[in-house]
Length: 382
Image 1 (cartoon, rainbow, N blue to C red):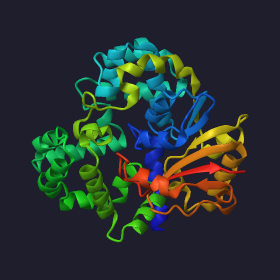
Image 2 (cartoon, rainbow, N blue to C red):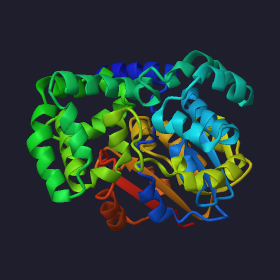
Image 3 (cartoon, rainbow, N blue to C red):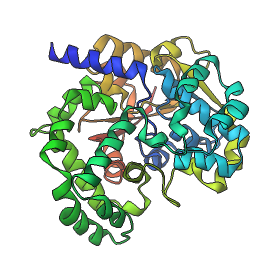
């Protein structure tokens, strides 16, 4: 009953809102195992579209982005149209700062007519996300709203405003770890923060489905908040914060200068603009899209989707059959999990997959996001 309630709550939130305003997977790790090249045809879950643009820099033949949530696809579509229509400085304002001057005018005059009907409907209602006088894109959507509320609380009730600014300027890892443990952690992990992170509704806002909550509980015997606290400490003391755009965007509400995803860097702007037609967007389940696909693919990027389906074996099996049917020989597959061991891949699929657990465990330790229990890479062998 509790799992069913959690699942229903998540589905209500997920189907009606933008959840992720940035991708929460580190593409640097993906590239180390995928080695994307000119012959690759990629199918991936959209999320916020940042990583699709990152993959595009490696010159694949095509990328198909699939997401059941139309708001996620609308965000990627807006990025593609902005790449086509805006000069670099305005594009950076919009998706680097998350705000752009004359946001309504820019949208109506330059972007709106290039969007699909569904995306126009979404952005007609939500273009205020980019209001230059508002919180900005990265403090909107459900994950962004939680980040904005948490930041306000930490600054105004826990006195962490200046400490977070100082923390981001540290370039020595030993000093960074010491600063986090002495200045940030004692004020960050208040009873209120722990209480909120343990709530199903909050986790649903952050894009964590009921099935993944169960996976995390299995991985941590002390509860969800303890799992998150441990993961954050490992990341914020062991990975240089100066280059960690995943966390800094939520500390600030924007990407600081020099600390942003590759798609926002000036040197890649014209390359991306020339290649945007290689990205196709589908609003669908992955299994449904693959079941009607006329092509076969060499790369599959599944994010943490296996956790989502772990309690639904029939749907999980259907998805893996679709993947195997559409996989080219030696196709590469990556996915992540909240659990250390992702042992629920159907046997028929597992028999055809060659994993590299030692390599991916080492890579997961370098993950700038740092909140996943494991990272998985496999090749299709037959």
